[in-house]
Image 1 (tube, rainbow, N blue to C red):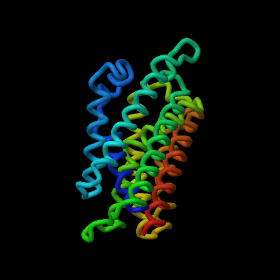
Image 2: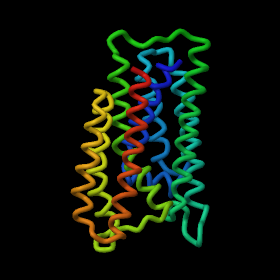
Image 3: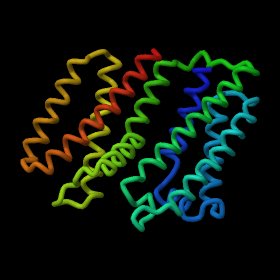
Image 4: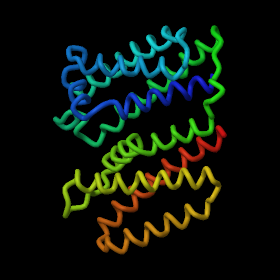
Length: 245
């Protein structure tokens, strides 16, 4: 069951974070079940979930995941479209983190239930040429990219960490996202190689460089908060890889 679960979770990460654009996400939120974006996304999830199992017989399980995924996303879109905080739609406020987190937890629960149900009543095994260690490494690297950037942004907004005043928020986050992604990838690789001293050196070097450029307290708080959140996500992904080696 665990191998099937990780395969399906990998399909979910690819479909939910790398096969969508900002435009399609806006279309899902604004039009819901009346628009095409929601159905296209659910179909992509269905196809990816089917493909990663290497089994034609799993089309039933993929269909269940695709259909339920559609309704979970439709519910999230409805909440973001109708629920208001201080007169603003919730997705434009610091509370946008909650629909995001609940949505992802529901998807993970769905995948776990389908994996358990399928493995209980059907035979399934990983292909011999698929190396579980490298599969989990791919999963960790994907999680450390777009999902980690989105979660970091949501957490900083929710905690009301001040954005740098001399730069637009979008510009500030994009530059930080690139640095954070590379940092998380290096941390995961170092943990995989069990070179923990290199992680300390990386964090120290980044801190010296970034804090030497941010003399103001407000900027220092933003950099420190983003760095700690980013490192926490990377370490969690590294532990995931080590636990499944």
